[in-house]
Image (cartoon, rainbow, N blue to C red; front, side, top):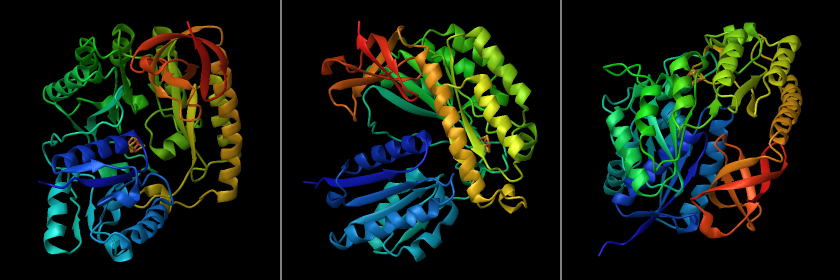
Length: 439
Ligand code: SF4
């Protein structure tokens, strides 16, 4: 009789990484590992890393130091490190953190079961990082951690070369999955009772450009929209240059495609956008937002912003602040620029002092919060269609769910509503969430 083993996984970074972790758990389930939230009960500990922000490596080594202590009390436990930091630093990880048994990269997570077998057999650490992605995207099993909403990766990698971004280095060039395989995965999700699917990609709006015949994200959304058990379809992250009129039109005309666009602008100053090599101007972005709002007036638009990019002047920073106010973003992810290895901007002069960046970030956050609060207050008194996802973690007396525009709504209600779509009258709002009552 085989003995069940337990895996504890810690995931840093974005939804793509969290989706990768669900695939790792799916692969491991096939060889007898069950997930656990108790690190002390784990036979295998996995750190799925992210290298987008500075300080990523320090964070990894700090976790590994703590994990080695856990491992010393439970001999035989394995430590594996994957994701972008592993892809970038590979063998150095094992040297600097001797308790690590397995290092795998971003292109070969499907190989983890074999790497586990190898390290168990030899008793030695195994490092396997592929520099090039495999030609055919392997279909890997997945263990979903949520029973209502699911992520589905549809494209990996990115063909842009933004001067601050490490993603093209660690994730490679764009590779789209075949539409048929995505449709089958979504059909299975529908059969399993999922209601909400988010299509993922570092640049999801480039989906299908590398396929033969070439298709675009709108084609895929239309085909997925036929599946009526899936009530909501979203996609992240879009690149403004690739969000075409066809895609916007498909969102407008596909009942299940949600009125939500996460559209990173990064800066509100043309000079900085040029230096970032983003490939669009502020005015291009403004016209894109106009197009979305003309076609889909109720759409929520969110963005990403970087402050303190090399050479950013006070005036250019204030252009970003003004742009946030002008557009009225529903929410913004903000960050101070941090130099990443293998990126051009990390070698440039004119690095903005950390104290200046953090002061700009503090000020920008205050404006972003005010604008998001204003946008949310507009919904008070209205009725929102909410997909109930579970109990609120902060206030377990309440249920929590999201609107079609991806706004979090908390309200009192019975557990059996989880997984259903209900009407909630919005009574109050802050910058991050709405509160209401069932109708
Ligand atoms: S488009 Fe996004 S993922 Fe691609 S290089 Fe630019 S910031 Fe990185």
